[in-house]
Image (cartoon, rainbow, N blue to C red):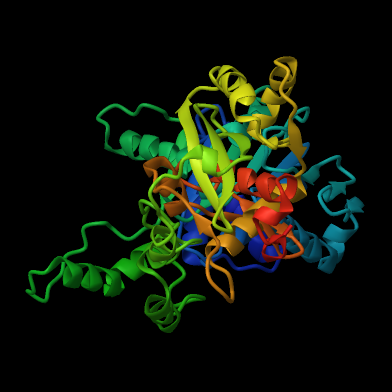
Length: 483
């Protein structure tokens, strides 16, 4: 391969001679091959997917490539995104620091905007490097020549990908670069692109000549050579295989050490070591019963309580993000404890208003709660139009519901103050639940991070909060609840 067939040689020379960054062998190889040219001198690959274990130097590739495209190719717009904005801003910050340290480059800078969430570098030649949020709105309205998506494994829907990659549609010679280590079954974008890339490599006739996948990962079928037949030992041998470590860590011996990988193996859960250090896909990175322990939850199961013993009850509605299912939770108090139950869990959302309408007059709930900023919030106008008085809970009250629920189930001191009838959809939701931080130490149930439909858990949590807040205070010692 020669400079006539790849612009990567120019990028490598720019890194070494101008930026004073000597690319590692794998970084040099990647730049040369990912920036190959077609006969018409356009880039061979419109989409470049880079899969490699953590801490091997992906950020350096971003810095070198983007600065080269700005100063040498003078592309109008480079866009950087990541699910965590701090990640894309980190590579931007480092790149700006490099530019400002090289007088020849610093002289070409027109403006640097360091505003958090709006960071941008603009050169006198008109080239810009702008940071955009990885969201369904990120990048819309822009026209990008080079788009970077970091931590692609965190894309659990196609919304961000659709928004930012389509900024390149009107460009003659654009590239989309996606970087990641391996993820789990939720990593739908990464997994789909990886499967397409592997299929193209193995196909007799290439299916997509514009997709380039560059993957450094440990093979899934590393063999145990110790002769012991048990599966657990074979897995342990695979995790310790130094050749497998090298396959996923092309910087091994340069910046990554065997000592560091050995320490990670000794302390990490298997799934974490495999994804982070071996770049292997796993079924789930979220352990079961991660928030509420199985024993703690199952110990609270009781025979279903007759609803007339719980009066007044509170209802709450929740809908999963995909809107494929809705849940109605109810909560009441019995024997000084909060009792929660999944009143209904069905496909779709059209059934919710009729279901509640049929029961409001009969049960006379003290509250019908819906989180205003949740997927169920869209049902509030229909509920109110049906004559149902809705308690719209704010985002901070979702956090209160989560915290209160956890305190009822597993208080730091004292005995649990909750009962439930042991229903499978609710049990599954508790099993797969994940908390999402909201700042100031508060959390709410994470609808996006969980691999299961957690609307049953959200519904009963909101119902429990509504029952404690709007029901008779004498039924339950409110001081035990956090809200």
